[in-house]
Image (cartoon, rainbow, N blue to C red; front, side, top):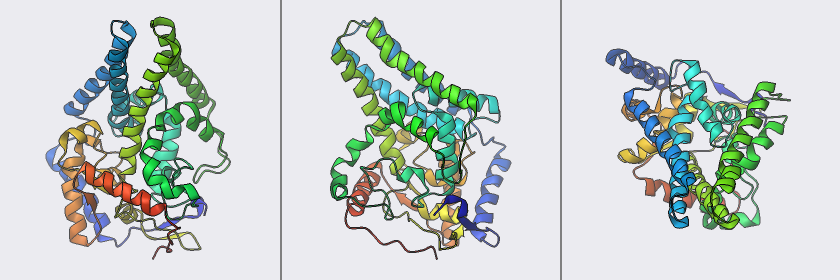
Length: 367
């Protein structure tokens, strides 16, 4: 069904919706805190940018052995993923700063590591956040034809084995992003609710310029400057992307394609069975609340419920407001899906891959 035809119930009369909005707003008002980045968020931004730029500079210095440079390439991949999680993601949601200029400048970090921020705001901010886990609409459920990530997707014979190769497939996420995905998305005429979509010439120019810059500093310059063979370069380049791709690919799947979250479908007229916020509670999961280093590194994306309900609140605040959201959900009988550890969430995703790879699961229309 076309996204343009999908309609959620109005939140009027939904006690949870009014309560959770009121209580989160009261938290910021009573504490006097801004819902944007604070000093801790700025410090994290500096650390992650320094890690990434520093790793690249050390590689380009030529002062290290090939094996040491390989380690730096892996570290560079870790930094690239961290920038995507903890800097660009908040900025592209308008959650980092009250200043559109600051958000826009930090959002370009996304483009400079090889992905296109403008297209991300369409496919992620608009389509994924609005139509979460709705088969045929949510772009995050169609990351690759090799993977069946929803009960409504077509099942191929090889999906029976996706639990065995799925995590390897995720490792190619950034390679696909850098060389194919953005171009494919720009060429689509229909994107979610957008029909016959055209893109501003400025954004097409940004796509071309930033992609060329990315190719230059990650491919051309190392081959020109470093005293290495082409195959040594290829190993380092691949290691960087496989590291970043695995981290990004796995973390984003743990929010929706795990046990607990549902895959509701609209009825024949396009109506969903719940208000949008309630829909988000049914389709999203948190994980590893007590793992503070993980939460720091992935920009609070283990608090996906809070992120989906309040995407314009900076991720640095998610651990605190999660207590408010969880208490409100319990009081109103609204689901709050949660896995206690990172490993528990990964195992749950593995089981979902295995289940979704078996003969097609039936989908029931939204109640």
